[in-house]
Image 1 (cartoon, helix red, strand yellow):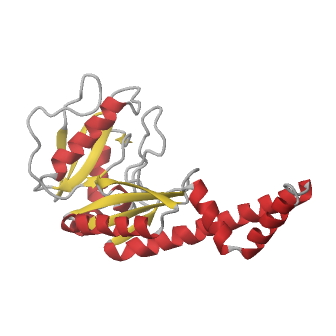
Image 2: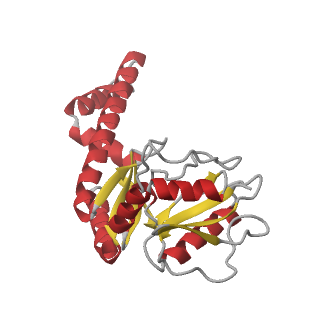
Image 3: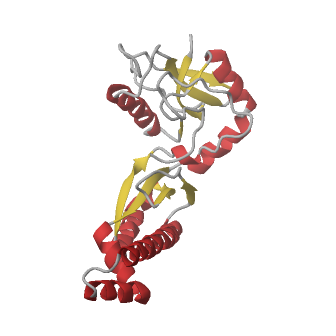
Length: 263
């Protein structure tokens, strides 16, 4: 039977509560696979696993319980290996890498920050920054709206200015928050967000990081910032080339043994 992987810990990590259930309906019992000085938190993988709310919460609950007892390298939902032996084999092969990551991530959490433009506010800012756009806007107004060509030209100028502002704002957000974090990881680009970045933060510095986010929000009112965290440090596991080929659960996407990119 395939083995579902929740995370990797040190072999000395405290045991999880007896009878703890994981993904599946009924929940599959969570167990520990030890190999040398490492351990993997696993369960049997249910057939036809989908990213339903119940199973997503079960995955997070297992990681939360494990994280309360010490550092854990979290696997993203849907990480599946062929069997228990495949998991322990990789623990042995990647022992040095996983041990280093566990030391590095001890006491740290991830915050994912996404930013988008407030459409009305950014248009106002673009207009204020660009005299050519202001001049053409006024000319069109005085001409009763302007010709079709003038309207097209204005639209192209505004679109180009907004795109340039997106690039500049993405850089500014990252540069403003980076000093408050230990590490930074760029997430995948997605429609609707001008930046998607994850920050690795000391748990006891989380309040200071969030205060920095609020200062950015105040200084850049034309942006809408979405902060998700604290999270297990998914984006900082850093898989190497010898990672096992995980078998994604049916219906999941991007399921790997050690994925990158914040949610």
